[in-house]
Length: 272
Image (cartoon, rainbow, N blue to C red; front, side, top):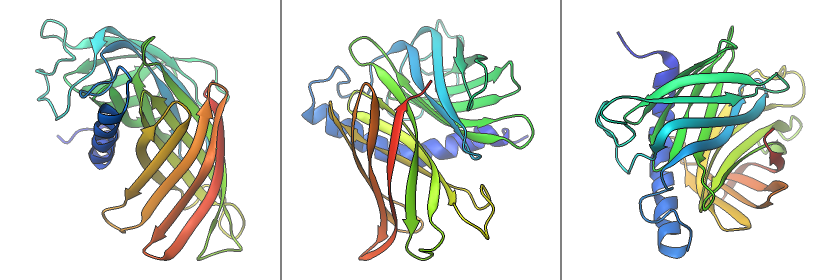
């Protein structure tokens, strides 16, 4: 029997982002004095980040593992990864919020690099841990779905999830405009996030034709930067911005060669 769709999405998402995150880790390891080092973010019992759904909901995700976990580079066979405690899956508990929902309790395990959890609100979470970064997908009640990103968070290298929105323009349909959510997690010198976008004006109803753009890049103590090329469309997606403890803001551009496809600006605040 194939794994559930959320698990396949989680692993596919990580495979798409893994090369970009690897470059980010190498860059920060060579040029940063952070505690992340060459093996990614440090092991931690606490992970912090965000959840974002395809219908415009975002919110904080906070997880606590029974023992420190931070799988090293490269996929580990299930049951043999360093996220294990004495050869057994590590229990995880936590909370999340979706939009303006009450706090939702999360309970699950991580086995090797594979994370799976359920919530008291009917959500299913699945993801892959690598280099102290947890990336995955979530399925909710009915047809709700989305993605999650959480990073190892410690006093020396804290992680913060930022939840925000963007306004933009599609150059192929300049009268339509684009709106959506823009969420990212920053920890040490690394960022990872997802932008959900959809047409903002008729004739397309809101949330129809939703597109999820996953991205990963680097961070300094005040700036973020993304530059990645989609292997299928060959579109270059870039992000430039600044952040502090109160929020994040900046701009994004999507192009192919000299042809611009979309652009816009985003703002966000710490999730929750």
